[in-house]
Length: 241
Image (cartoon, rainbow, N blue to C red; front, side):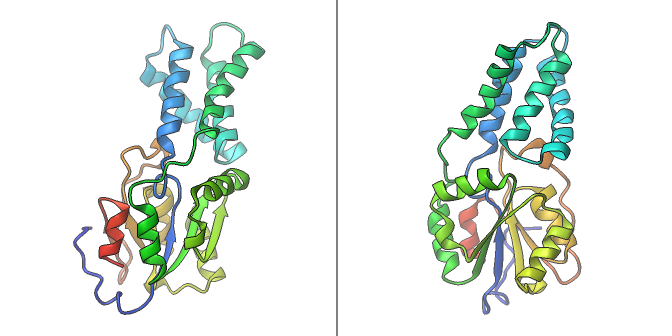
């Protein structure tokens, strides 16, 4: 895997780029990390270290994803459930409100685009087919897309409940995508890179320093006759596409 791989053979024809949103086009997880730090400080557990509390929260978040999906609603439940699991004293309604407030602050934060994203999308949209593909709560993700002002660069927007191999195959069938000329662009090995490669697509991995811990995985090798690029930043897409 390298960011120096040549795509000269692909540049002759238009490609389809499925592009992730959170932590690929705009900041997202840094706000959750700040909320988690506030939560751990508020809990101020006398027996568990902050790292141990975070470990419990990670486990609770996995359970909440199954029950509530992704997004702030699920995150809020995870914070409350974690507090109830670890707190010595009974959890009062006031404490519940304080904990939910950590999640509400995230909802109120303006969309912060990552460097050079609009210019890069403008460049790519004139050459290739762009489809925005993000997972999470529809209302929540739709709101971020609208506030970002980036929808105009995309032919379509897909907000899915989960990004797994079946989802990529479904999207490929829906848009009649050709695997050899379709690329998933994103920061998450678990949701963007590995399942799209398993669905016989190409992938572009753009790591983010604050990718959610539950999205971490070892990046797998592509199938024969497919490619994976690893780029240092989103704007580098202009050098390859």
